[in-house]
Length: 329
Ligand code: 5GP
Ligand code: MN
Ligand code: MN
Image (cartoon, rainbow, N blue to C red; front, side):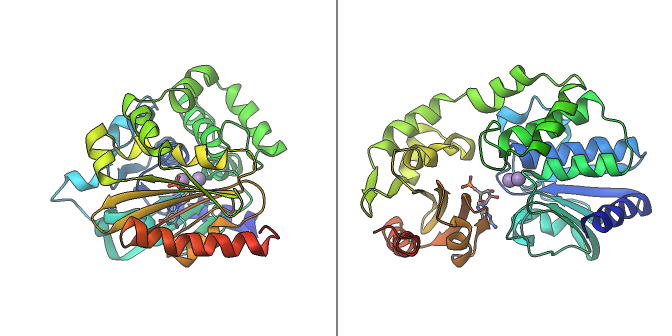
C-alpha cells in the first residue's frame, strides 16, 4: 500500500546518513522543486546531502532556496561516488542521465515519482501515479513523518505543484492539490512572485524560436494533429537553450479542435527530441513509450534517432493510428 511505501521511505531516510539526491535531465519545476525539497527535508533530519543534476539548473528556477548548491554533473570530470541515492521525478533509471556514473555498483536507491510509466527501479519505491507532482508525494512524506514545513521547503513544494498542474489548470488539479497548496501558502510561500518567475517570464530566445517554429506549423488528420519543428540551426541562430523551447508544443495543442500537439526538436545531428501534448482523448504516454520514452497521458516525450523527416514520419503514423482508435478520422 501507499502508506507502507511512505513508511519504507521514512525508514530509508532514517537508516542512512549521507544522500545523493538527483532529478531528471532537463529538469522542470517539479523536478527542481522536489530535489531541493528533499535537501531541506534531509537537513532537517541532520543528514548530509548532495544535490545533483546532469546539466545546469534552468535560470528561471535559480530563485528557489538552495538552488545554488545543486551540482552540475556534466561540468565535472571527477566526482565521488555515492551508495545512497534518492531520485526525484524520474520515471525510469535512464532519466538520471550521466549522473548514473556517480552511483556505486551496490547502491541503495529510493525512487520518488508520480509517472504512470514508472518502472519501480528503486530498492524502495515511493510512487503514487495519481499524484499531480512528485512534490505532492514529498508533501505526503513530510506529513507522514510529522516534520515542520519551513518557508524554504514550502516554496520548493509549491513550485512543483504549480508547474506540474500548469498553474492549477490541468485535470490533475484535485481537491487534495488545493489543500496542500493552501497549507503551503500558510507557510509564507509567495504565490505571485513564484508564478511570475516560473509561468509568466519568457526569454527573448523563446520568442525568436516561437516566431520560427510557428512557420513550420502543420495540421493533419482533419486538423486533429498539429506538428511544429525546431532545427539545430534555429537553436544556434537564436542562441536558445533547452529551457527556451519549453511550452512551444502547447501552441499546436491549444489550437481549437486539435487533439494532439507534437514538437520535433533536433537536439543533435540525427537525434530528435519529441514532445507530445494531448487535449482529452489520446494517451500520448503510450506513443512516447513505444519510442523508448514515457511521461503522462496528456504530456509525454521521447528522443528518437533519425532525421526530422524520418522521425516525423514514424511518429505521425502512430499519432494517426491513435486518433483513429479514439474515433477521429
Ligand atoms: P516534455 O515534452 O516537456 O519534455 O516532457 C513532457 C513529459 O514527458 C514530462 O512529464 C516528462 O517527464 C516526460 N518525458 C519527456 N521526455 C521523456 C523521455 O525521454 N523519457 C521519459 N520516460 N519521459 C519523458
Ligand atoms: Mn518532470
Ligand atoms: Mn513531475
